[in-house]
Each structure stands twice: as structure tokens, then as C-alpha cells.
Image (tube, rainbow, N blue to C red; front, side):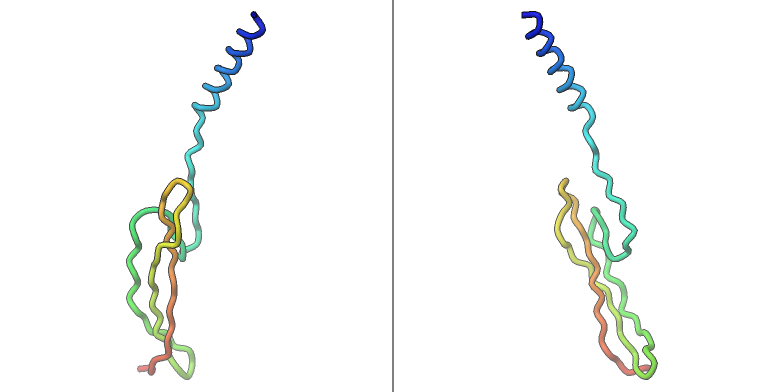
Length: 87
């Protein structure tokens, strides 16, 4: 009987110790083309870049690309390019 009581007490202590140390997720991201959580980022204004003998109009658009295990949205940036006249 005493060994059973000790086993139950040890199990209860172990359960309380494990339950009190919940790991809170922390997402660190250094990639400017990916954002974790929050609202949808604003799309950038189209910009024109010189590519030597021609120019490119570059525009960025954000889209939701899934969720983290705790439900935060993952935002990814797409970059679109098209040839435009320079000047």
C-alpha cells in the first residue's frame, strides 16, 4: 500500500511539473519576404528599375500561405516583373 501511495504522489507531482511549463511558441524571422502573424501587409507601390537597355516594372503582392501550429497566419510576398519602356 505505501508503495502505491508513493507512486501516485510521484505521478501527481510529475504531472503538475510538466503541466506548469507550457512552451509558448516564438517565431523569429529575418526574411523580408515572409511575415508571421498579424494582419495582411500592404502591397508595395510599383517601381521601375533600369536593366540596361530596357526597364522593369516591379510590384510586390502579399498572400496568406498557411498558418502556424498555433493558428497565426503566414504571409508570403510575391514579386512580379514586366518589361516597360524606360523614361
